[in-house]
Amino acid sequence: GESVGLHLPTLSVQEGDNSIINCAYSNSASDYFIWYKQESGKGPQFIIDIRSNMDKRQGQRVTVLLNKTVKHLSLQIAATQPGDSAVYFCAENFYGGATNKLIFGTGTLLAVQP
Amino acid sequence: EPEVTQTPSHQVTQMGQEVILRCVPISNHLYFYWYRQILGQKVEFLVSFYNNEISEKSEIFDDQFSVERPDGSNFTLKIRSTKLEDSAMYFCATKPGPGTDTQYFGPGTRLTVL
Image 1 (spheres, rainbow over the protein chains, first blue to last red):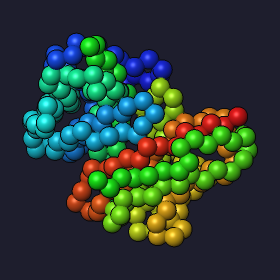
Image 2 (spheres, rainbow over the protein chains, first blue to last red):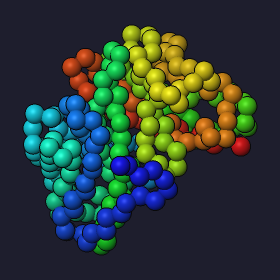
Image 3 (cartoon, rainbow over the protein chains, first blue to last red):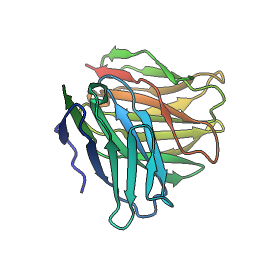
């Protein structure tokens, strides 16, 4: 299940290493997923998305993997940089009424050590 | 690159007072959303708005909350009588139109209720 509270899961990596952030989603019918990056005091910033008809999608230094069998999503960041330090949220897309809404996961704090 | 903007960045109010949070969506975007994030917790959906009416609202969005697009530019969230537990970051998000699911978030308004 999801954890809710003040304590965020934290991933600490060395600069230059690859980072993998994981997320479990709840609805097997969800068809669209997004990873957002949130820096302190700022709003969620779109990183990369993936549709449910795909297993993998690559962007610049980022890759998202989707495993629908176990309802698992991961974000891989290559050659992690100090500027990547932030909280990362996965979000799944729900449709209700005339439009969609996003259901966010708990978030993971990525701390990049120089 | 066009961005969602929000004002004010920080609002402090007394319990029981009314507040209005303002958002200027990205030009030509048709769908509008409010989300909130209590400190240290995940982002939660409040309401979606399309074609000048609410499409969907969450359980959080009770009778104390209302939204409107008064002048075709701003998109506002009003909290009629604030409570201590309304203290949170409030994010506006917008998306272009049907067939697109990616929502773009503003920087947020930090609401502090004393």
